[in-house]
Length: 115
Image (cartoon, rainbow, N blue to C red):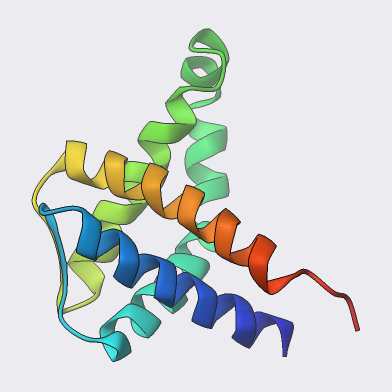
């Protein structure tokens, strides 16, 4: 149940972020739900591999390279989800930052109660 709530909150955050950024387009709420699901899967499967492969760059930049990894994940999701379009790397980077902030605010409002 907690996963479904997180998925809905992430979809709402993606819709709001796409509304705020002109370089990102999401066609419908169903697309946003699919995007949230794809991002969850990519964050579980692909992101740890990218973090391990880029560990020297991450250490050298004091962790700022993780923002680049997030942007790459967003661009990969843009290739996988039809109806979701990102105009370039910088829009993907900005999308990941803004979506993280909005997602955190929405999760804080919704509460994080463990059953």
